[in-house]
Image: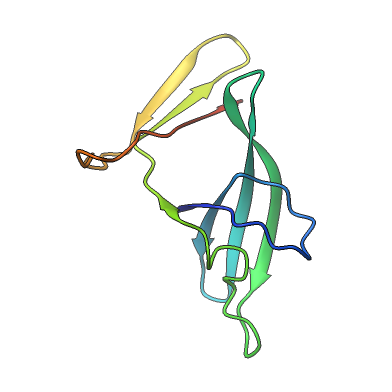
Length: 103
């Protein structure tokens, strides 16, 4: 899942989006930021938030708007690209988000 990151004032996390996965006892987060000059998203942070009696592990994703990713483009260092279609049905009012990273 992806959410738009709703900046928490006391946090040092800088990201436009957070990709996350809820596991048995933790939420794994990958913070993505956007480069205006390169016109692509890139990884900014990686962290794990434990799920326990005091935390549901969703502090950084609770207020973010969910985003459906339709396509991922992986640009490799040899100049080739790989496109992954995620099979999300596009609603008539939905916008398309493309995330790319250098590999």
